[in-house]
Length: 368
Ligand code: SF4
Image (cartoon, rainbow, N blue to C red; front, top):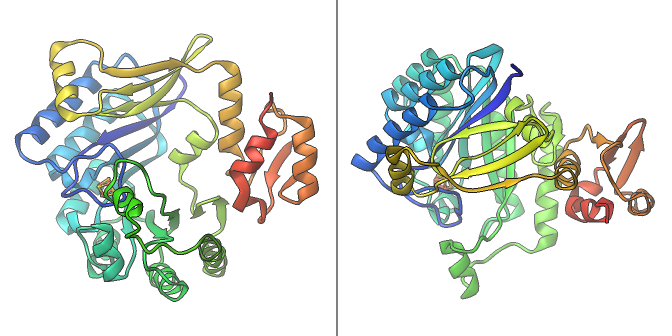
C-alpha cells in the first residue's frame, strides 16, 4: 500500500483569537473528553487502516490544549492504524501558552518529532490585540523546553500586516524569531475573514491596518532576513527545513484526515474524492456514536479541477510546477513577458517578483 499523509484535527483552543476563522472552539471539560473518545473511535474504524503514514500532522485548534495522555493516545492510535514509514515526519502544532517541558517530553516519547509553535509575534501589544493567550516570554520558554525534550525540528509561525504594526516592529519580530534558531519559519500575512471579531472591527473602521505597499515591504524584508539567517525559501510563505507534510498538499497528493472538521482527499480507483468531517464537536461526536457517516460534505475532484489545484498549489513552490500540468499557452507567454514567471526545462516557476502575484499568475495560466 502506498504511504499517505495523515492529518488529525483537534478543534479546541483556550480562547478564540480575533482573526481566527479555523474550525476551533473555546470549549473545555466533558465535550473535549467525548470528542477525543470519538476521534479514537473514528481512527479505529478507519477504512484506510493499514495504509502506512508518510507524514502525520496534528493541527487545529490547539492540539497541545489536550492533556498529555489525550494527545499521546491519539498519536498512538494513528500510528497503530497507519504504521509510520522510516523517518516519518510527525508534527504537532503547539500554542506557547499551553506547553511545558513535561508535556513536550511526553509528546517526544510518544513519537512526535516536529513542533510547530504558533508564536505569531514577540510584541506584547500585537499578541494582546490578536487575542493570543501567550506572551513573548512564553515563546522563548517553549522553544527551550521543546529543544530540551529532544525536538530537533522546530517551526515558528509569525504573522505580519497586523493592526498597528510598523516595519520597525516587524523587523524586531523577525530578528527575535531568528535569534531562537528555528529550523523553519512560516509567515502569514493577516487576512480579514468573515465571521471573525476582526471582520466586525474592520467594517467599523476600527482596525489600523498597514497599507498594501508596507505589507509587500514586510514580506520582502522577511525573505531577506531569512536568507541572511540561512533559512532557504522553498515556498511562498515557508523557509528552512522543508515540512514534508505540507509538501504533500502543495504537490496535490492524497491526504487522510481525522477529527471534527478535518478535510481529507483520497483516490479510489480512478476517482479522487475530497471530504469534510462534521465540524462542530457535538455533531461529530453524535455522528460517531450513531455509527453513521461523519462527512458533512464531499465532492468528486474531477481531472480539470485537480489539474487546476496542482497548478495553483505547485506554483507556490520555489521549485515550480511541472510544465505538463494543464495551462493556457497564451497566459504563460504573457506571464513570462511580464517577468513574473520563468520557464526552466520541464518546469514553470514564479520569479521573486512573481511571488507577490501568485494568484494573478495562476488565473492567467488557468486553462479555459
Ligand atoms: S490558537 Fe489558532 S486555532 Fe485557536 S483560536 Fe487562535 S488562531 Fe484559531
